[in-house]
Length: 172
Image (cartoon, rainbow, N blue to C red):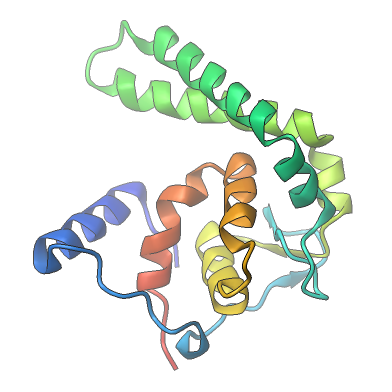
């Protein structure tokens, strides 16, 4: 299941219009979970390992969070400045460029792509599947939001896709 940014925004707008506030999150135990890929061959590395602990890259990302935020802000600013001259699509492209630069800064700050892959033993081919799996298995973890924030530094597009993926997940 691949959710586009436009579909995510439309779904969020519909929910807010229909209910005035987001509907309650589904019960994690009632969600049909996607199966993760064993190993790091998928496109997106899980922030949790197969034994349920956070991957070392997540711990390191949490430790350098301030540096990651600075990188993201600098990337957003650089991207926006570069695209200022392009009407209408410039803002969208500037945001994407900023996310890419911020992501690159965050990856560099925690040791690079190889470090992320070497400390992950589960992966996914889509951020939607990873979002659903994480919510179903770990949303009751007291550190869950911090772990999600660390994951968003590496996969910024996941932040926009997370809630629509959860609301759109199949239930048992």
